[in-house]
Amino acid sequence: MLEMQFGLRELVDIGLVTFAFYRLILLVKGTRAVSIIYGLILILVIYYLSEEFGLLTLNWLLANFLGSMFLVIIIFFQQDIRRALSELGAGSLWRRRNVSDRLVNEVVYAALNMAKSRTGALIVFERAIPLGDIIARGVEIKAGMSRELLVTIFTPGTPLHDGAVVIRDGQVEAAGCILPLSSGVEHSTKLGTRHRAAIGASEESDAVALVVSEERGVISLAQGGVLSENLNEAQLKDALRNALEK
Image (spheres, rainbow, N blue to C red):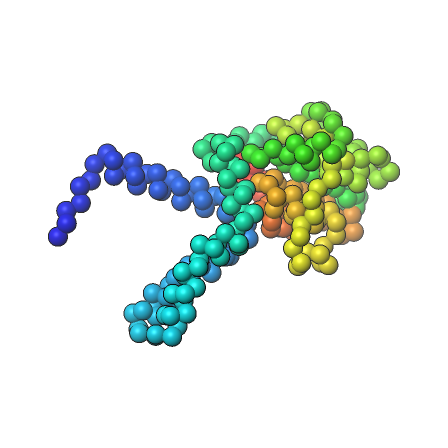
């Protein structure tokens, strides 16, 4: 039998692999990529069982599928891969963000206020991937965060209420911003423009987008192309903290 030599190099090797998997889990957590990963794991398990029990036809089919898995992963995960590479380039995979309670509280209280009055709103939080192109299409604000400012911006009839607010480094960077709409067919008929824009922004970057529906008066949060709807105060605070600290 081969004896395993375990030293500093092996320890570093295991540590790096463990850290890489940990960051990968954080990266895809709460995104649509999770369900696809579960599906691929299930296929691998079935492939292994088909070999063990001699199911030749099933094994042959799965072997051919797994042979092209690399291409399948690129097709399925193209937006997630692009977002991950952007985060890696920005260095966000190696650090954890600190999010102030004041920022979360001000945004949440403003959102609750607007939901109660059925005032539509769209607030985007810039994370590791810069949103310079989106900010450039809006109106520069560069003001400190406050619930009063957010409510004022989205008050119907004001010049900037139809666009999105972008929050960068804890301050209101711009308002009246135009976001890319989600191209997902499943979103085209079920959701309004604000919700599709929130999902689109979270698909194209690692941004987190908060939406207040003027029709239903409910609050939703988009991250990684996934929309979590009808959040209450506690759920919204937890979701924002978890998303912004990653």
